[in-house]
Structure formats: structure tokens, C-alpha cells
Length: 330
Image (cartoon, rainbow, N blue to C red; front, side):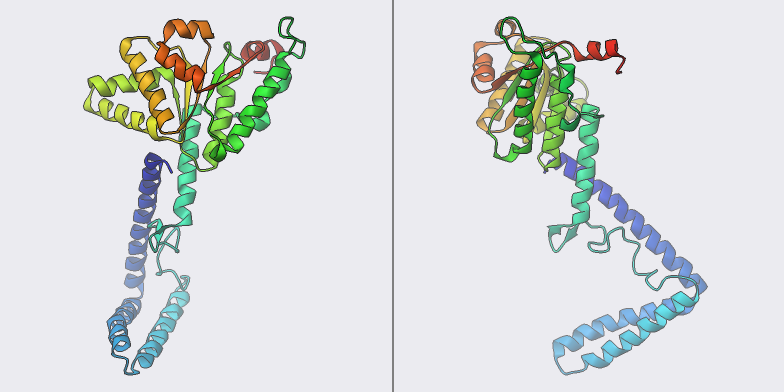
């Protein structure tokens, strides 16, 4: 699990618990004010608890009378609640999850309610990063790619993208068993970001931690952290992003080549790529640059890792955004 997202889920769970405690307190105050006998009954029931514990430890057979007395008091309590228009469990806690009483844990294990909340937080976080709309493998439209063979390669863009799609789908579905890193290469508007989002959605839904970040933002975070640029909060946020990028199960580095190039940014890119390779963490990077353009832009050390350790997937076709606009599909 992503520690940052789990912390967010725990914070939301704590807010739920706090609300439940306030609601429960308000219920008791209202009920006790209207039916004072109920408060007296609750005090009597509470007083029996230490007596029962003492009897159980003593083992002298005096526990049964206490148990029967408690049952009588609880029955009278339920009668009074119902008689006055409340459910019999009205004072038993306003918990969203009675199983863990909104703590998120049962006997030291994470409760299903916290797991569900974590999934919701993860989905929201990923949706905000990717601006997810219809990006899923089920909505990827191969019909937007020309089926006429390329005069040089003899392969049509549609056939090429069908192969790319299949590789991306298999990678995402079997992510836990895969070891590959990928470099998506191709011109603008050919579906690199779309398929990256599809992979991110599927991998995240399987419970793996995913970080999606534009290359410019990723390398900027390294510089902010290293040179303490900006406010203390800026540096702290940059440091948190750097840690997440280095530690997440899948990093999606979008638009490599659009970042401002400098020695610090080259150093940051090398550190990020090399750190993840050494840790056997998987990465999907995308770029509009050709191999020749990348060789001019990046150091041999970076290129040896990007083209030596990453499998290159070449995207083909015509800018889909322009094509949709021409067809009135936007």
C-alpha cells in the first residue's frame, strides 16, 4: 500500500470516528434528559462489569447471578428506548462500522472498512493525477488508426497499435508477475498518455502503488529538494514526491523530453531511473523524441539505461486529437 494514501485514508477514518463519537454523545444527552431512568440503568449495568470480572477471576460460581441481573437491566433498557420511540440499539454507538468501531482495525488487523476507504482514496488520487475520464482498455479505439500499410515498413498503424495495445494490456493485467520497464515513443496525440492511464488504472485497481507524474514536475522535485528552492513547505512536498517516485510499485513518467534541460535535471533523471532499476521497481516512460533526439539531449549513462533496460514501444498513426476534431467526435 502507498503510505501517503493510507495516511489519508486513516485521517478520513478518524474524522468518521470523531463524528460517530459526537453523535453518540448527543444521543445520550438527549435520551437521558427525556428519560432519566435510562441513565440510571446504564450506570447500574456499568457497575456490574467489575463485579463480573472479579467473580470470573474468583471462580466461586457467583458469576451467573450477575449475568442474569445484567440481562434484566438490558431488557428494561431496550423496553424504555422502544416505548419512547427510539430503536433498542440507539445508545449502542453511532458507528459507521460496528465491527471496528471506526478505528480501522480489529485485533491488530486492518478492517475491511479501512481497506475500502483506502481504495476510494487511491481512486480519487489517481483520477486527479490523470484527469481520468474514459481512459480504460475497454474504451481504447483501434478504429482511429489507419489500416493502410505503411509504404516503408509494410505494417499499418492499426496493426502496429494492436500489437502495442496487447503488450500494454498483458503488462497491466499481470503486473505482479512482470519485470519489464517500457519506453513509449511516438509523435504527439498517438495514445501514449491514454495507454499510460489505462495501465495506471488497472495496476492501481490491483492494489499496487502508482505514481503518475510529468517529467518536468518529477525532475523539478529533485531540484527543489536538493537546492531547497522555495518555502519550507515546497521543499517538504518535493521531498515527499521524490520518495514516492523512488518507492512506488509503478512510476509513469510522462512527456520525457519536455523538461528544461540542465545538469541538475540530467543528474535527477539518472538518479531516478537508476534508483528504480536497482530496486527492481517498474517504470513506464513516454516521449515524443526520436532516438537520435534523445541521444543529443541525454548523457550516454542515461541512454544506456533507457534504451538498454527499457523495452521501446513505437506508437504509430495520425494525431488522434486532430482526427477526432475532423470527425466531430470531441
